Image (cartoon, rainbow, N blue to C red; front, top):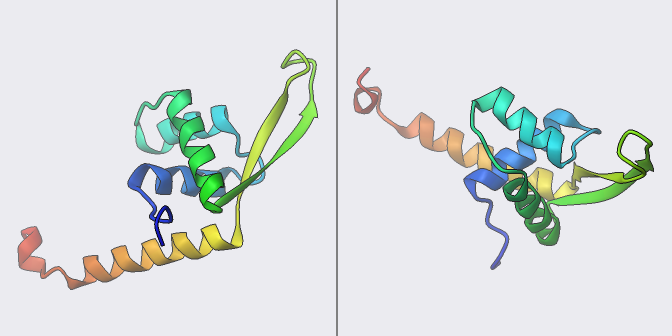
Length: 109
């Protein structure tokens, strides 16, 4: 089905959304990606991926309460859907199958 493939960055975003559950929102995801991988990403790249993943049905969002700290703005939290969980599990299974299929000599071992 077109539009349902999971790219490497999208997979990373979804995994981090799972790690941060139930507090996964744009800025926290950006920071956690850096913490976990050392990879610097822009907030706009994170937001673009989050919205793409939501459109594909892999994530869903809800707004939190407004806070004074944020000037009355609400955070938009993301959670992995059942469909998104299935897609992540399939990606993990494919990667594991491929890793297990590589002869040790091919990796210098």
